[in-house]
Length: 293
Length: 293
Image 1 (cartoon, rainbow over the protein chains, first blue to last red):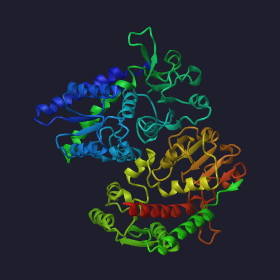
Image 2 (cartoon, rainbow over the protein chains, first blue to last red):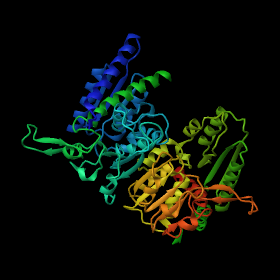
Image 3 (tube, helix red, strand yellow):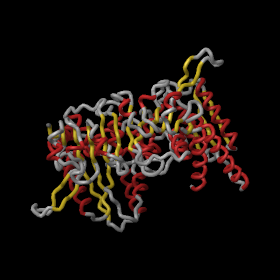
Image 4 (cartoon, each protein chain N blue to C red):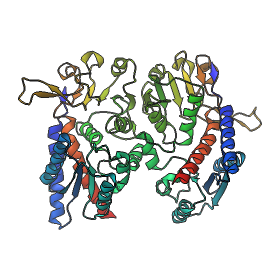
């Protein structure tokens, strides 16, 4: 059994990006510049955005945090996005979700210039992904592909079962794993809350990608010997024996499932750390495309 | 066993649209206007476009055929598309594929105003579909949904197996059948040329949607009792006993599979006739949206 070590791989990727940025600096070129828009003071969002900004600093990117009050109107946010779209110094930007209730997220996503949409959440980019065109792949799915690739996990002709149909993970993973090429060429089954007899389906899977959010949902008796497990679930479970008062649990009963798996991601330290690394990679890509245009 | 009669349903839809158009005329409103761009003289394309124009006439739409020589450059075609985008009288238009080799189809698709893209092939519309937003659904997938709906075929919690991952049918069907709502909420397996042991998968299916293009590929022993069969395959098989010298065959061994099926589409007369009806429906929708803006 091999652990798919997202912490290590994400550090490798950040190191590789640092080298690329240093080369840019050496040539006197502009370095990539990522902006993050945060509306309001949601605790988790503050943590995520802070961590994105720190990662930019680590690899040598320029970063800008646009922090707007939670009373910001949709119109004000759209004006700010227009400004970022038109700012030649900014290569890519993200709008941290969720947005306050007075703002329509769909309208905001559509306002982002697809060429700067390093989250890959603009429908044009999502559609390009589904139609096998070159584009920004959303960070979490992209991180999963990168893990499979770096550990040379075979995917062609394998049966991949995806659990959960969210726009952020399940839906794009089901598309990406069935695309032509590597990692891809899998036969993919997408399961969700309306799926009947899910154990019967997971028991046939060569690869399981779970993005459900139910702690330890996937048990050993639901999988076959040699399965590859990608656990995208991150749930805080209260636990008074820990100093923080909780532990982070994935969707997978790691202790027992890992005994049958050929490859498995731990939680934490698996898919989670990959997400920011892939956001940085998308920003580097955005810089290169801006340069070409 | 019930035949899903696409010929009848497509006529019903055209009749319904005719009534809507008559209401528009009675109120003195502008009627929907569809333009079709055809580059070159490919025989099949001429037939398709001709049939789309005739269908417009039948329901009372205005239609325009833009027929360009096969020597048309990409730049000339893009200029023509720009013109159609800016023509307020035109509610929707399609660019008939395939295009001659000197033209990059991807660039052409991206040039169409998504609000007039009644084929639903612009990545922004494809992405909206995958992200559960309101948009134009491509005609063939939309026709399949309409057939399932009009015959009240249950889809929720069913296992749908899609054969083929083309952008035109397989990929969008796999997305649409797993979306929330009806028809949808299916557990969907997408199979393709790299799938191993496909019979094992089709034998588990409650619904099979085949868009493969191999005549009579799906045999009775590959399906279970009560299966719902949607056959999107259309292949000309030489047959000298027929006056045309060929017969049209679907992907399904109709004679034997139909004995086990609860619902089945014939070929011809199943999915095929639905496609143009749904293009007309999308054009009507485009007219309504133009009116709102």
